[in-house]
Image (cartoon, rainbow, N blue to C red; front, side):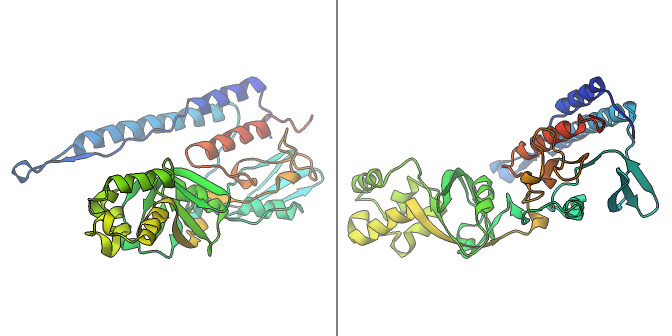
Length: 338
């Protein structure tokens, strides 16, 4: 097993820091003038191509640095077993056996198995008698028992989605199957299915302010009054069969119910997307099994775990990849001869 200098590892760290996640959005401009349609597709394609080339070059730079430091990269090599014999780890593939004094498991969780995340790292931990917490989908779209078609495609900014003590204020998207967007993804860590979530369309408005607002607009129709607060299709949905009625014609109970819907509409959660379609795996190698300063197993010397194979999950937006890079760095700089 190659011993890499600390200085060399610092260079790898810098290469990782230089690797920035970029994206090139595809944009189209549509005009109704003379029923013509002008597309910026060619510009977007060129920008996307340039971005892909830049990212490819950065990956190549990182790969070159790894090889320069004496490490080998093997692809299309499936590990079938891992064990420890006479203080050395034996890692077997279908046709080769690798031995080392130290082993770092960075196999990821079980999300998106098409990328290679099969949960094999958890099997390794179990083989060495380490506890693995229950695995489930996190940062996952939510499935709901709800009239999806009425609101499908609507995006809401800075609304509050809550369940019990968990309150998430962020953007939300209604889909054909339920809810997506940051608010739904974050709440998914706290639900399994069978819960009732509540949606506050106006978290910055209290009920008293809303009562005043409706009183000031009592001569307007229910639908038009709601349009001053929420998107038109949401207004139509909440107004229901009273859309054309004036606010002053509403029974006090109906007005109270309307305000309650705005501040806490009930949404039954029936489940969430499977691990195969979720961004993050909740659960993993129990952190109680790991030395937090070295990420080494407390039971098996020189066996380290890093990344999402651990019982660590964070919000989307770069937090999980940051955790993976940081834990990988900590595990990597530990010498097996210390």
